[in-house]
Length: 342
Image (cartoon, rainbow, N blue to C red; front, side, top):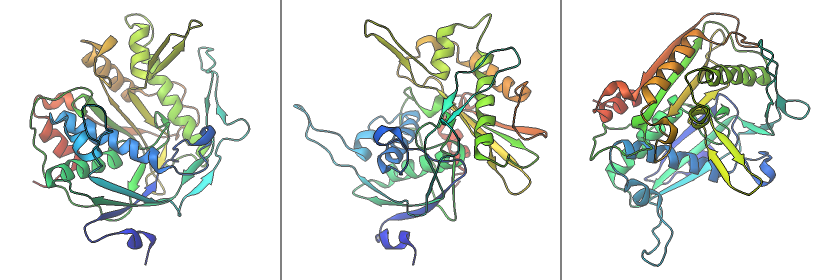
């Protein structure tokens, strides 16, 4: 009997995840030496709400994930229980020295560096237990998980290569989604998913796999630099934090995540690129610019970085899908992306 079997109740949905790139969920001092379930829960909640928003159902967040009480509302408990068994994970520190990865580009620009602490690798047993959730909401949640595990990422620092997982074995079946109203940003109606597939093996070390993803990220970011592109737009898409001496703060989280390279069998490898644009309630600097930005990113993925560093030394192909191509039928596009039953 596995640990998952011991956790599973009669109405629970259990499955096992396996990391393809290391997993990071922060913790005290951001050391990452343990898996913190709250980091996984927050990631799953966020992604499932992006899907529900695309279907025009903003009430999903409160019905499924609960709410804190206030003067006008009683608290509401979550309608789903999430239990994680991390006993199969191993902690590792893949970047020697100070944990930084940096290089000097061909144009002489020296990147300030990306820094990593401990990360987790291995299998994770997950159990979802319904607590009064409707069948419709449960299907939305399971479909969101299916898309997130197959196309996106979980955990923290996923914009810098971490958090790619795969389902090891069977995953609960899902039914078709239906829209119930107009999509509201941020949502998966603004999403795109891409995978670069190399025709040769991944680099031997995790450090080199991380650096390859970071070089792809730097390449994409440079695409939105220079003539014709505003600095604010680039910051909106790839993230930015600026705190002045007066205490004012301007901050954007990254709208685009680029994974490290991961193995696809012994002779092939890949990396994922995905994003949600706009990723905020208001489009900000992106207003009216999404088609141009996404087209530039797609073309940059086709061309590839001029200085690939430790990336696999072989050809690659691009798999690409963009919600904007579905027109107004976002539910059908999400069903296709998830591989939902017909």
